[in-house]
Length: 292
Length: 291
Image (tube, rainbow over the protein chains, first blue to last red):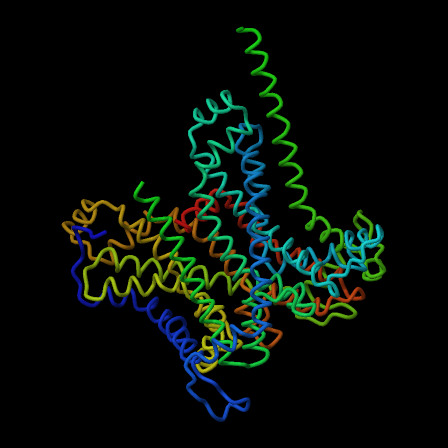
């Protein structure tokens, strides 16, 4: 990555990196270090005394049934959002990859939900599934399903999954489409003639797409973990009875609302470990792609 | 054989023809349905919606609802900031984040690629590691830093903590590495300094990448949620995304849904317009930013 020809200047490069480095130090590294430090401290409820307790906050959290519940919600939520949005994205991408008229128009009409904020997506779905004013909410009640996501935890979870996935399909669609278009047309045509479209897809196209699939898997899990805070905050506020409280939402309520600093910091550190693992996975994939 | 084979081929092609169109059309309808419903909602009055009697046809209150949202932001039951003020806040936040990220990433990537200096790789890794430190994992300490600096409830607090960008720096570094050494050599022979070379060669060569990043980052900035939720305390500083959610409150049936829906439609216009009008840059930016 080194260039042969470079500029000689003792001061200029430092000035050029200074703004970015200043922001990362003040708003990233210092707070992250604080979070790790605080996760090892225990503060009394009045904030008068602070005690260094090593990993006590972590053992408290990991044995707390509320935390384990939130972990369970997060796993269900993330799996559902990832499978749903990737599956539908792949379906549409396969369809749009076929040489059909108006492919560009379809692509444009498929991509715009990417621009909708997660919280706004939540508002749109709330308006449809509201038990007393929403079109589908009322329809469900009319056919005898007691639909009320404000009372029923499973229904609330279904609704946040729908809203979060709706917004994410576009992203998966675009990457799957790019992946499909990179497969030589002649390979697909030969395989389709030989084995029929369905077998061709599962035994030729899908394996060739596996790098894209793996990459999207990581990105979607990250999205479901971190970027869906807005969906949950706008739709259910983590409720009813914590049925939609994901790990991120719990960090927010414990830290910002309940002001449990040590506990919230320990949760942050656990999330940090998850992000580092996911990012490492993602870069391992990229490295492999570069070597091929 | 020739005849039969041709016939078979034709038939299968025709069948391929309508299934994709049908599936894609269904998909587009599902995608568009929530928007359609919000649009209809923004044309009725509060009573019609509140009684659960909203029809699937537009009502008569379109102009009135949008005007009310734009100038007051409030209805009978909802008290909020006027949409025009929240839109202004969102625009400032999104644009400062977008141009801030692009600017500081351009110059730091330039330093890393075109200069040799001690700590070069150290700085590069420092920027890279921020990828692994999303706001969510350092939420309270970051809030505390911003509050100690007196930046709560200000545009600087809303934007500056978000303008570091590992993604943009990595992307520009990649682009700069493709600039041939001969070009740098020629510039040096002509007596151009580092900054001159930056302005007259590097910046124009990165034009398309800047456009692509602009689309992605503008949407990222506009759609921010957790950060503005923490940083803005006065209602006049609210961004539009935060404003809508506050309008809904607990989501009672008897509220000014027509105003909320008008606001929702207005909140989606800028980012959706950016994607539609900059479609080519959007796809390029999305795929490049994730490499």
